[in-house]
Length: 106
Length: 156
Image 1 (tube, each protein chain N blue to C red):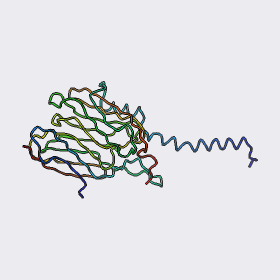
Image 2: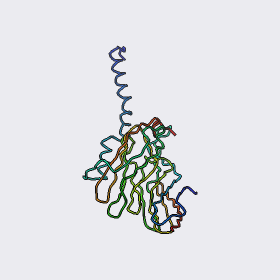
Image 3: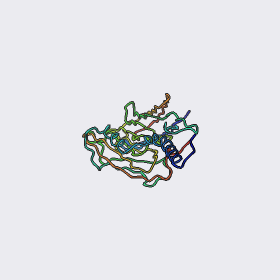
Image 4: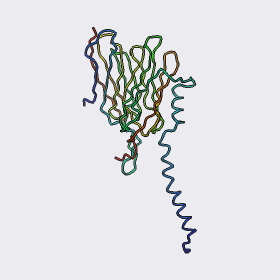
């Protein structure tokens, strides 16, 4: 399931500050909602997001139920070398998704 | 059975009212209180003082739909090896939980800015705290009016 949308510029000049945008398709069930019968709906959220740039961790986020469904995250990074960004989402009920994007730095 | 009198009737309805209030009382802890907000902040900053400034918290002041509220936190200043933002923590006052998110960055980020979309269960205050490399904590807060609250009265 292609659940992730990633936006990374394909090329950048060395030293440029680039923005990375990520969107993961996920319900982010808070665990505070009830069914019509009054039972609590079990929590099902993405709890952790990590971004690695050529193997080095550059951004990490702990997420809570207060993050909206389909968690969107955007952050910045200095373009140093050509290579690969790897993204990882981990969540409740064994949820785990990865994605990657390449960049050419001139 | 004794003949119902006005006094007995009033006593019974009084008891019924009290019994009817109990479930409402048990629902109250679902809402974070300013005290929970304060303790969640203490969990992050410890005993260190939190100063106001440097941090910019961008949220629309009037929100129609509390289920999806765009939010951007940025911290002023260049990101260098000696002087950078280590992490940004965002809290709320009235959702069931006081935490919204923790974001960890470093000098290689170039710019200390994070955007996401959050849920707000009520009109309330949102607080963002930045942890700088020199160990200091800086904060910004914003009051948001929410017309359609997240989580409220939602049955599925």
